[in-house]
Length: 389
Image (cartoon, rainbow, N blue to C red; front, side):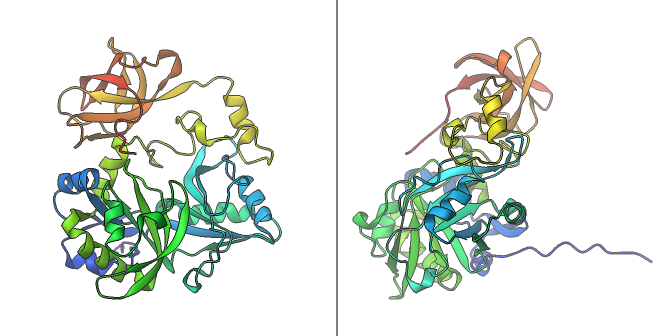
């Protein structure tokens, strides 16, 4: 008798059928069936750098946090992230992480304080704070956060009911204007606001506009009810087509974020790497009044790091991949690559990784990367490789 092992069922977003019908190459990603690309990855990447791109990011986890008061909710979030939450004004957001007791990064996230003005009925669960985290870690994050809940705090995963799409690139404001959003209504960087889109079909849809992104370009992430996602997606693509807007898949999302030197959990950050080591110390408040998980470990580590995050420009055409060794020119191994790609914007291979701090190259100093057993000359460069912000 033979036994057939069935593959686990992949989750799908509200736009899954559209992706299937419009040339999306679908691949498993973090338990979801997601579009890798629609056409040439280079074209999708270039659209974001020169015009605008639209991403389905509804696989991301969206969690709401409410307490007896907003101050109570802020204090609780402050106890589980190293950045400062209590000082946030209504509508502001910050990048942060969830840490283990050793200061290692369980996941990274963005914490948003809901705007002061009451949101519409569409967003009834969003009353105080919400958190967006990585798709692959959502279930683990929920379980971990529930272990640390205190009296009166309610934590809810609302992403089954709400979806996210990202509109990124220098023409994003013109695309929003084409669906009735005046530039004066677009929130500033790392703030959020609710607005209404008027789509080409005449349909209107409420969205929470978050001025955040993961591409190295200015843009927004749009939070919407699942029932409105398809109409918004199709309406934006129709209105934005004359402006060069393209749908963009996971492949270009990765090349874009690597050019911007944004960390990817499971590659550049993980539970063995702290924010201080990862070059994310700006997002950590070592002396925050509210004690948080991992604080003591970070305070101890701040006295002296043993490894350092670096960005490298490689010679030639070979692309470095995760775990490729970084060496001195004499062959001494000093670290390894965590992410690498061919940069479509810059025209050469780039990589990120960690090296022993005592042997870390200075900016513009040469090292080597072992790619498929071949020592490729590389130069340490300033982070990020590219920024359109």
